[in-house]
Amino acid sequence: MKYIKEAFDHNWVAPLGPNVDNFEKVLADYTGVKHVAALSSGTAAIHLALILLGVKPGDEVIASNFTFSATINPIVYLGATPVLVDSEPGTWNMDPGLLEQAILGRRASASAAPSLKLWSVSDKASADKAEHRVKAIIVVYLYGMPANLDEIMAIANKYEIPVIEDAAEALGSRYKGKPVGSTGKFGVLSFNGNKIITTSGGGALISDDGKLIARARFLATQARDKAPHYQHSHIGYNYRMSNVLAGIGLGQMEVIDKRVEQRRNNFNFYKKNLGGIEGLSFLEEPDESYFSNYWLTTILIDPVKAGKTREDLQTALEKENIESRHLWKPMHQQPVFSSCPAYLNGTSDELFAKGLCLPSGSNMSDKDRMRVLNAIIKFLTK
Ligand SMILES: *Cc1c(COP(=O)(O)O)cnc(C)c1O
Image (cartoon, rainbow, N blue to C red; front, side, top):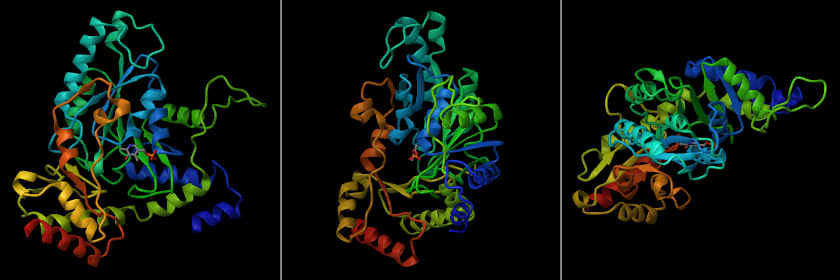
């Protein structure tokens, strides 16, 4: 409220102003990157990252298959084709082995049939250009869990493909001590209302490349040339964060560590008290390299071992007025993306069939958690 009041008192009710500048500084400090552009959404950040990497009609972008559609939509905005890569069972994020298969597979198919394009409107792909049709890799950190970044970066570097880290759900998570979003060419953050911190709606593009972030700010403010009149040499977007909302972000960044602790407490509480139940397992940090913000606590119910299905559990919780939700529906199962090339291993299908997000809000009291816990235990062990 203090930061919002300041914005009004100084009449900075605009898509720029001191709160925006300060929010960018605070985010840069927190994530350890040099430059940040505060934007209107995480989706806008992904869109600009792809534009800055030169993604054009006829190109391909490899992305995590197990994600929310906002990861994939901007690829299609640009007339490029999403290439979906399935998950590994340990982190539920992009499987590095499959990533390499996808890169090699796209090269093979590009030289075999250079005209096979799904959303393409351009027909310039020559044989050697086809080799480089994969312009970017978007790796997602679902539910806050970092991906196997060492292996993914090694493969991306081997084939010289830039990586965009979709850390929309993972602010506060770290891989080998390094904040997520700070390793690839770009990191993407979201401050949508459902994320670990929020500006009601908003996002950020982060990078060590100052020129690219300056370019992102330019494109995000309608690409106005430096001229005494309104002049444009490029197509621009209205993607900047407002100074009022950046004020909310500044307030939220004062409590981010507390929010991470609260979300991790939820996970630890569920894990400690449900860990022994047959047929119930958690998405959990595979080893000390991984530090998750545990945005949501997510479980799998094995119907054979548990003797009950995920649906049964969800219905039982619903009867006690406790909401739980299915995991993200994988992109290859989405009607709109069903024709995209996909490199699958069955993992996301299985996660989608057996998974459940448990109540995970930062504001859950001990009493709330006990109520959820007792409902789960009562149902699964009776
Ligand atoms: C929320 C989310 C986004 C999009 O962020 P918005 O700010 O809502 O546009 C992108 N990717 C993932 C994985 C998300 O969860």
